[in-house]
Length: 270
Length: 310
Image (tube, rainbow over all chains, first blue to last red; front, side, top):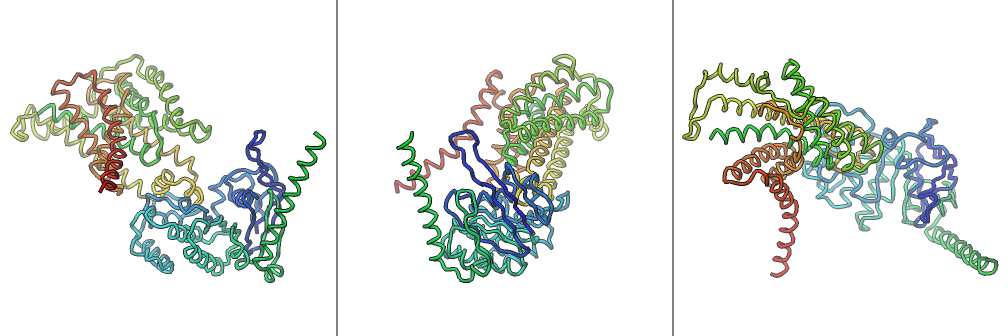
């Protein structure tokens, strides 16, 4: 389904802020696969997601979806088959527009917009029907501006919008990181439900080991712009949070050795 | 009273300008200085065409296209070449100054002896209420002709406002509003935000050019200087409208911009009548907009102080 071949990305090349965000990363996702991406801050996990979404163009490598090369496609064109939920609840919705207008925009993802009426009556009825199961009593407030809602409500709506038309690929970028634990649990529950129901291929970046253990059928751990570990379905079933934590420690220890060795070398030879 | 009618008529004509500014500033959050050039550009195109014997309606529509083209250039400079929005506008505005002089052939074109849209209005008024008739308005006698012109302008601006309201409620218009509200979000829903910004700035400048065209036809001349200060003028109208209507509904905001334009023109007429030096007009307009921009924040602060002191 999704095929990422040797992609690399350097941010701010040639400056002091140069970052090798992605280094020859390759990844293949099967149809219906649900992959959790873990990693420390700056490991490149969000960058990987943004590369697939088209937020920036990669320096080298290829990205294919269903054997179509989309490496050079702009972001809005990739949205034809990609649904996204962002880390920041403010990113996924237009704050000054009403809930129903936001939803209406999502019903045309990847379709031509044209001069048809933006909010036909039958659409509003459908919104009510699909917002009610969120159990946030939003169905009464469809005309209110979305900016007045809480982060959790906005994130739940963004998820609904991203999956309103079934996307080929769903990209979730730490979409519960900014929420309180209770709301986060609720949003995760909704996420699991829609992915299972519609069998959506999903790439989910998360900071939570618990989520990585509980959700999906594969875990990838990124480190310094590379994929450090990749666990398939079998291994994942036996995996515990403590296993992941010890892996993190291992990576961190490797880092420290690298740095101290580098210092030692520098002190003795330069 | 004649002065008052004239002011309201000009206010209604300039409401077209306010709508244009509303589109760029409020819907797209794009401070578009092209307005000053495209206002004159609209006037210049219409004046040149009308003098060449072209149908005035056609000349006005051509102004719209001309303004939209100027806006397209600004939009492309900003989105494709990543030039700062203010600078893109300044570049196009500056370039338009020469274009306007070329279009007109000189710096001022009189239209008094030509057939304009307003000549049509006058003829229609004569047909409707007779030659040289006077009408009573609030106890004053005014030429019926002036009242009819005002009425026709009102109808025109109401139609244009309705059209705009309809457009921004269509799927395309909704996507445009979302572009100004949260570009990242609407890109993720498959909309080419660069195209939306280009189209929006084009639409905005089309309206502004029509305002220039109509003003030139109304006052009977086009002048290469007539666009100066128009941006702040339009912004003042939009701000007054927003102060009057503290709602977020699209229809009300559009209505507010139109009413704001008329009110602002009236305020200016009254101030001039009371002996304000016309030379100070732009200075006072700028001060007014400045006040309108800083007052809301200032009031919020004083409110906070009052609340905390309790």
